[in-house]
Image (cartoon, rainbow, N blue to C red; front, side):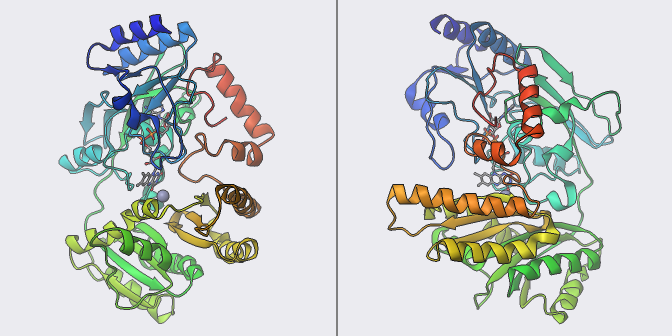
Length: 464
Ligand code: FAD
Ligand code: ZN
């Protein structure tokens, strides 16, 4: 290991590695501080060539590598294990925008670019990069692609997978796979880039990507809507998709209990209503140049008793305020120490049924636990979290957690859904992949992993 560490220091050069425990510390745990790892060295290569050299050296020594982007992932995928023998590779310095092509509506960027910087780079040439999520100020495009991130605009633009035209990847033996094409149509063989999207660093290290850009949505309108039942959100969505001519950019469901946490823990956060309602939907839509479009659509929805109340933002500042409420949820939940997190998806047609059955299920298993529900209901994706009573012992918490999570995932599976909609599998959901994607599916995943990484040195122990 000592010889390898010296070799790695030589490859990345001074200032691009650390073995200092204080500097390493924030890289050795994840966002919620639930998992802790160890590493002999963190290296931060600044070019694809350096990534390749690092991987080649590690492969020769049979030492594992854990790629780390912004370390905002929610499944502990970017944290090394506690053996102290896995090299941590930070992608942070690999952060150049290689080119922006407004006519091809594309940009070629390196993996370590921070998502918010890419949104700004697109805006600078009057284009739009729609991937948007709460962690956009620190997550990186490489991490977004490695987890196939979703976020708030999937309803109109798809997940990260749909936004990638080309990919550059360093394979487990150090080979650079240059697929930085910017084509919208390309049927020349297998679509290799999609193999790496969502593979969470287990099949290759993403070093660069060609991303799809869009014309901006133009004028948008944003509103917070109050609902009496969560199931109404499903009918409301269908109603508004029609009346807004499928221009909806975001459609987010939030329960009263969640917004209560936001108002409690986030300084200055305040809902714009005088009363408390059971459920809320935050909607953003392109207006197609008609400033009344959203208001008219909401009037129809109110006549059909799908909404109880609505506040339409009068300007960008008001819209930003509404979005800040939504984007503060993860932080508020962290302060609250919310127990069980479930990032699930359900076919929207089954959503109403799922919401009713899920509530009944929890009431039966543990009536004193609380459901905390919010998420991208427009995509059939809910963050379906549960807080356990505070007075439980750690052992009782673990047992209750296993029981409740297992029952929720079983219900999700029964309704045709997924136990992981947008956060990936990482370390924390490995056993569920085994359970719900067993048989031929996981068998093929294992064969792919073996074929691409026969030494098992790329983020071993994650996903499968
Ligand atoms: P990391 O956490 O560093 O890594 C994630 C995984 O990808 C790890 O397995 C890592 O090994 C691998 N990886 C990282 N970079 C590379 C690379 N270049 N090549 C190969 N593998 C790599 N997620 C959503 O999908 N939607 C949301 O709405 C959302 N909201 C969030 C809000 C908050 C406040 C927070 C903290 C997180 C949220 N997330 C959300 C989760 C997280 O932001 C995403 O998973 C994000 O895509 C992770 O990017 P990252 O750069 O931080 O990756
Ligand atoms: Zn989310």
